[in-house]
Length: 313
Image (cartoon, rainbow, N blue to C red; front, side, top):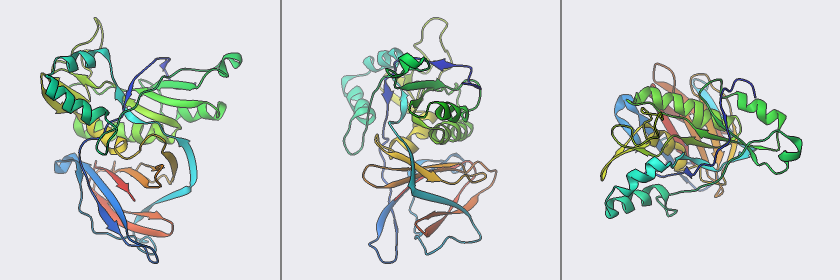
């Protein structure tokens, strides 16, 4: 398993959460009823953090020849997804128990519940190799503290019948929101998914303002997805990074094909209800106009530099 310096065999509780928000745009398709489309945006330069966008574009007959095109093809499908989230550690649990009952219940509902505005799931992870043991093994779990995320495709090629999971990546304190948003979206949300991972977990769910608690010699700079200071909740970069996927790519969704485009890394999924989800990062140093094409029709959009968007139709 070349290019990886850490391979982990651990049991983790994955938290897949939905920040509270709602966004819808409409597209018109000739010969069919209009479909509701969601467009969500995080653009730190513009001070926008996972917000609904009022977008009036419509899917036309063909994409503009003047634009770069991201083509989404639901007829080509890959791995089934378990979801996106973070690790619930004992340190996170300690901070949760220090909250008042009302504040804790409100937060846990936002992060764990399965109703319209919330989602949560957990599962165990293992590793493989020995031929005799392999028949009892589900797959391999990886962290990325060295090497390249693309190495996971090498593992898939050698063991196509085994699952791959991405189970930990930290964000250091103090956070660099634009840099963290871009790297984690490109490398984990998009990169791990495009390289056959069934999930992505950030580390970890919660820490206090001093990045505590942790074991002696443990990470003293690991920034939680949220910071808990008593009942006060601060949502950190990982919250917004995960939100762009976790809210829409529910467990059971399937990754589908989308082309690789320079400066616009992206990944697409089809949910069990039949909706298409496309996540796009503009990693260039300028605003980018591009088209999203599906079934011969397209919409034209523009993203600011460093912005992340999720489209659902």
